[in-house]
Length: 241
Image 1: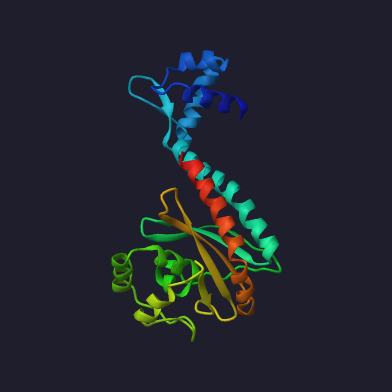
Image 2: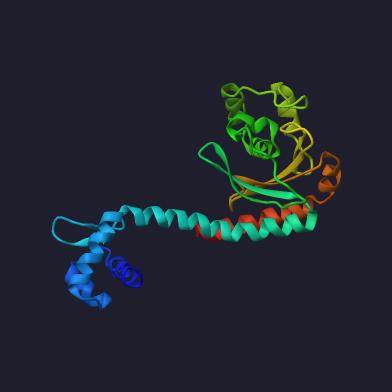
C-alpha cells in the first residue's frame, strides 16, 4: 500500500502526466513493480494510461477529492454545532441552500437531545420547518412567490401552516429567528438563524430542535445562535477563499 501511495504521489506531481520509467525513478521502485502497481491502480480507477503511454490520475481520485472536501468542511462545522448543543442542551443542525435545494450538512445531537426524524424531505416541507422558513425569509418576494406557486403546502401536523398568506406573515421575525412550533413533528419545536456569505446573501441556516416549551428560552438565547452562525459564516468564507 505504501508503494502504491508513493506512486500516486509521483503521478500527481506531474499535471501533464509522466511515463512509467520516470515514475519508477521518482517513487524509487523497480520498473516491474511500477508497471504492476499502475495496472492495479488503473483497474480500480485511480490511474489512467493515455494513448501515448503517459500516466495520469484516474477519475476515482477526483471523486475522492470531492468527498474529502466535504469531510474537511464537516470537521470544521461539527465543533461549532457540538459546542452549541452542549451549551443550550439541544440538537443542532447546519444546512446549506444549494441550487434551490436545502441540504442538511451535519447534525449534532445526543441521548438527551435526539434529532428530529427527517421523514419528509425539505423540498416538500420547507414551509413546516424552521430551516426552510429561515431560507424562505431571506429570499426576495418574487422567489418566495415562485416557491409557493410550485409547492403544495403539505399538512404534516395540526399545527402546519398551509395557507400561503399566513405562511408569508410568519416569515417576518423581529429578532431574526425562524420558528417551527410543532409544525413538522408533534412534540418538537425548532428555531433557526440564517448563515450568510460575505455579501450578506443567505447560504444556509443554523437550527436547533427541542421541546416546544423551551422555545421561549431559546428565543432569549438568539445572540448565542447568531454568534455560532457567524462562526460558520467565517468558516465558509475561509474555505471559499
